[in-house]
Amino acid sequence: MNKSGLRPLGHALLVQPYEFKTELVAIPDNVKERQSLLENRVVVIEVGPNCWADEKVPRAKPGDKVMVTKYAGHQAVGPADGVQYRLINDRDIFCAITEET
Image (cartoon, rainbow, N blue to C red; front, side, top):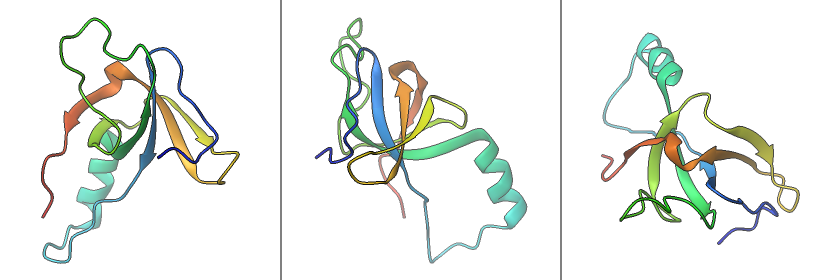
């Protein structure tokens, strides 16, 4: 449920970044830095009304975890909850995260 006070329009999605953490694998700092330059992991909060209008199947729905390019979209703080979000274009999603260990 979207409690941010932000509503995506057109082809935009409202997403919230999250950090993938694992207790089982130690990732060296240089690898973390390199990875953060390439992608960001986000969870979809809300989908605009025209997202994927020209595709048969939507790429993501609210609650899905996906990867987007680091500089995709615009950062925004939700006026209703003060939490950091991003508004991205529907084409900025390049990977669905189906399982994390």
